[in-house]
Length: 337
Image 1 (cartoon, helix red, strand yellow):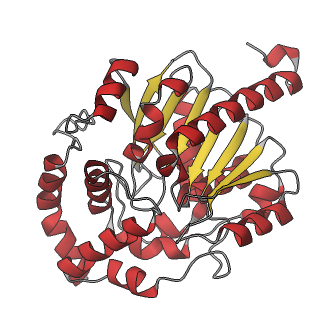
Image 2: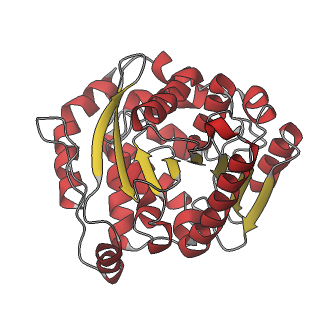
């Protein structure tokens, strides 16, 4: 309880820290604030090639949790829904949202429960019950009206997609991409870092924040630039301590979700992943779904979409185009728009 009360008292300080590194915090109205960053060549390129405006709104999950959603890209393009990982937020996908190559798609990102600007319930069951996370994703899809989207899940986000598939099937999506995906919370698939995971739950603030920094560093074989790292670290500071404590016990319906998936499925891992064991994860996933495709980026760690963003964006674009074509070939004529 000391840990929880400490973080609730310090949350305003953490929010102030977030503002100093360029992540918008919602004003009293509950609307998401615009994202800002120190001017760099990358951000200048993004400003020149990205849409001037993005759409931000909230969605309410069936259990009452509010989810912060952001859209960009072409509102009439094929939809791609990005689901971030543990201690992240929708800002984890900035290299995709800012990519000129992906602007022809409708890019939808949202903050998972317990993360970013989304609601942070206190009860452990709000995080251990994998169906809650699946219902969140279904609520985002319904509210956005995204038709036959491609789902992209990173790490924990891949487990969310699996639970969505188990609960809702693949009938309303075009395909899915798992990036450094957690297939199951199995020691054979998850790299051991007991000290880091222990310290993430520490009631001592310095120990906890140092553990967040250590966890984030483990996400990358090639570390991001300092501005990006600080923004991602701010994401972690916004995460709910109750979520961090409960999520290691989250249920993942891998057999029903991956086993029942018949739409195109691509797994992308980094060969230098320090958090998820790439080859055992691919092997387990293929045992559940023999038809999936997989690729391993030799120089990437746990975040190929950031470490090798250009390659990832090219692979994603090719997959989306193929998945959309597959969907149009297999849908009844009455379902095509």
